[in-house]
Length: 217
Image: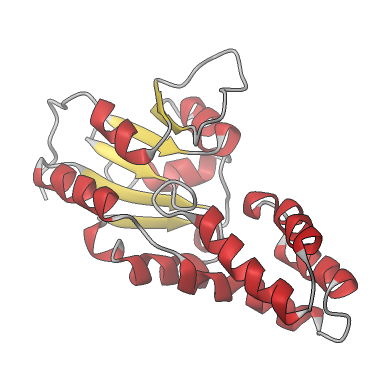
């Protein structure tokens, strides 16, 4: 079995990490609850381009800050709040012990995403890491899935597991993969469902069927 695993809000709680960082930034700017709520909406779960969000923060909260400095802060400062739950780490160790290959497949910058993997202890449990900046294509582009699949080209039992309906699940399905959606309590928005779905990654990994194909390491 080869598992392609999204990073943010799948393996790690990016939503909570960003919220904790945002609380500190709003306090620094002497803002209030409305500013915090605005910033969380403006972040759009990390989908707003960082340069764009930095400019909007400078306009509303920190008019004396340089947008380039804010962009760097947006990229890296929330990393110190990122965690991977011990239960998820235990699941991954179990899967590796059963012969599964684990590849992180994530959009983002190499510096930021690799820092998260090192901080959380995930790096030591992975067989490969595929990051959009480093391969020149972002999910749901078929090219990034091809790069991930090249990590275990002989394994017919490959899954894409993630929280984003379009980038992870529909992108994975278009690449011919079985899919597992980490719903985070949201309803599935499309007619064609994922292969499996569950509210958390741990619950989803419990649903994976046993594989008859255990690649040699």
